[in-house]
Length: 174
Image (cartoon, rainbow, N blue to C red; front, side, top):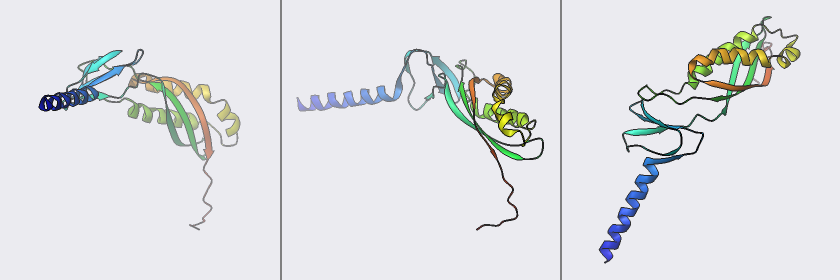
């Protein structure tokens, strides 16, 4: 009887381990992707989803809007270097099964940085406070039009900070 109980407990531990590593619950309104060798095998919008251990992977859920920081170094039209900090609220639609899986945010982030740098080249350092206050709509429009084709949906873009880089004035390290 002791051997049977030990075998039963070992089986329970194995099944519990398998269930925790191979099953995921997907809440309603979200999705999860299962990939095998970098290719999307299936997506699931809600309920339980399974994967083969050591062969398939669960990819992180990016369907809900989440905030990502964007930092851009650029130069105004009068040659003043500035640092623009933004917070983008983005989501990524579920990929199609059979297609290679790649997180589209890194490419979209680079495109967004280039779009913001292009907008900043129209700014003047002397009018920076007023220009930055009115820049929300042009920045959002530029970023949205740039990243829409890259598989990222921008829900909101908040201008957090604009900083001027002061000249070093020939001072060395202290």
